[in-house]
Length: 95
Image 1 (cartoon, helix red, strand yellow):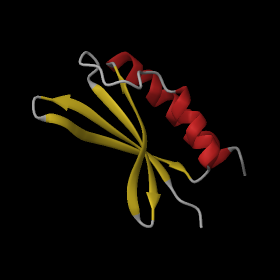
Image 2 (cartoon, rainbow, N blue to C red):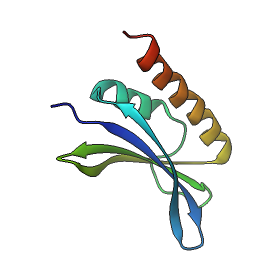
Image 3 (cartoon, one colour):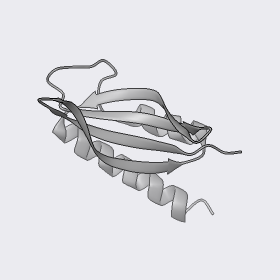
């Protein structure tokens, strides 16, 4: 059985991180990991980076965080373009 992957987006608030978006990126582990690795940002939590991206895998119907990155606003914009391009490619060009 294939497990779905998704990217969870959060922004830093005075009370911690608050989720504001999510992209489903498919079931192909290799493609999903390659996409996540191509995203701009830092694997280490940084105080001056206000956005957080988590790679989530659904295991037995439960979400499990696999990897995380922090990024700045300009990097978030670049990441959104990369994600949209990859999801578009998967849905429209691989069939």
